[in-house]
Amino acid sequence: MAGAGDDAVQRTLTESAIAGERAVSLARLLFCLVLGTRSAILWRGDSLGHEAERAWMTFPGLAGAMAFSIAVLMGLGRRRRTRLVLHLSVALDCVVATLALLPGALWPWPGYVGLTNMVDVSGLLIIIVASGLRLQASAAVLGGALNALAYAVLVLVDRVVSGDRVPVNTTTYTMFSALLAMSTALAIIIAVRTRRLVERGARAAVQAAQAGDGLRSVLRDHHDLRTVLMSAQINADLVARQSGVPAVANLREDLGEIRDQIEGVKARALEELAALEEPRPVEIHAAASEVMGSLRGRFPDVELVVHAEATLVAQVAGGAPTLRRILANLLVNACEGDGQRRARRVDLRAHGDAAGVHIEIVDDGPGLPAAVLGRQPGAAASTKAAGSGLGIGLVDGLIKASGGAVSWDNRDGAGARVVIDLPLPA
Image (tube, rainbow, N blue to C red; front, side):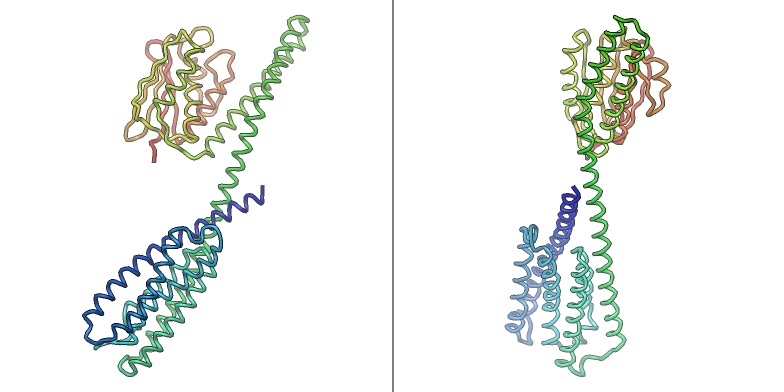
C-alpha cells in the first residue's frame, strides 16, 4: 500500500506541475501573438530599415515558442519526460524574452537610452518568478541563471552597438542584478513550498482513501458478524425458555448488548465514511421518493407522502446514498412509532432558501418520548422502549458530516416532527 500511495502522490505532483506549465504556456502563447502582431505593425512603418533582419531574428523564435505552447496545452509532458518538458519550457521563456528585447539593442532608435533604463527588461523578472510554478527547484534555478545570462548579453550588446550613447549607471546594474537574485530566490521558495503543500495534500488524500477502504471492509464484515450474533441470541432465547436457567437468560441479554455495540460500530463507520466522501449535490424529491417507495411494502397501512420540488438540491457528504440512509432511519422511526402504536400518515416536506435546504418529517403517531426530546447530540436515545437509539445517533452523525443540523420536537396535536437543515450546493 505504501508503494501505491507513493505512486499516487507522485502522480498528483506531476499533474500539479503540468497544470502550472499549462497556465504558463497559455500566457506565453498569448504573449507571442501580441508581440508578433505589434512587431509587424511597428516595423512596417519604421523608417530606419532592418525589417528583414528583425523578422529573421524574431519570428522563427516566436513561432517555435507558440508551437511548443500548443503542444503542452494538447498534452505534452503529461505522461512521461515531464521534468524535461518543464526545464525546456523555462529555457524557452528566456529565449522569447530575449528575442523581444534584442532587436531594440541591435538596431536602436533615435533617443534610445539602453535596455537597462527601460521597463521592458522587467519581463525577465516575471519569467524567473513564473519558473517557480513548475514545482521544481532546479527549474527555478535554471530560470534565474538563464535570465541573468540574458541580461548580461543585452547589456553587452548595448555597450557594443550604442557605445557612449547609452549612459553607464553602475547603481542601475547593481540594483537590477539584486532583483534578479531576489526573483530567483522567490521562485525557489514558491517551487519548494508549493510542492510540499501539494505533496501533503496528496498524502492526506491517499490516507483518506485507505481509511475509506478500511471502513468499507468493516461494514462488509459487519453483516456476517451480525448474522452470527442474531443466530446465537435466538438459540440462547430458545434454551432460556426451555430450561428456565437464569444464567442463560443473562447470556441472551449479553448477546443483545454485543449486538447493539456492533451496530454502534457500524453507525460510527458509516458516519466516518460519509465524512471522508466528497460532498455532492442530491435531488431531495428523487431520494425521498425512492426511500418511501421501498417502505410502502413494509408499512402498507401507513400513508407516505412527499412534498418537495423536483429541482430542489442539497449538498450531502457521500451523495444520494447518505441522504437515503438518513431519510430511511427517520421514516422508519416515524412509521413504527413507539413500537406499540404506529403512525397512520407520514409527510416529508422540503423547501429551500438562502440559508440552505430544510426537510421536515411529520407524523401522526404517539410522538417522541421524553428521553429523545431531552437528548443531546451524540447521546443514544430510542423512540421505542426496546430500541438502542443507534439510528438517531447515525442520523445525527451523517447530517453533521454534511455540514448540516437536525432537531426534533412533538407537534401540538399528536405526532412528532424532525427538521433537517442541509447546505446548498457550492
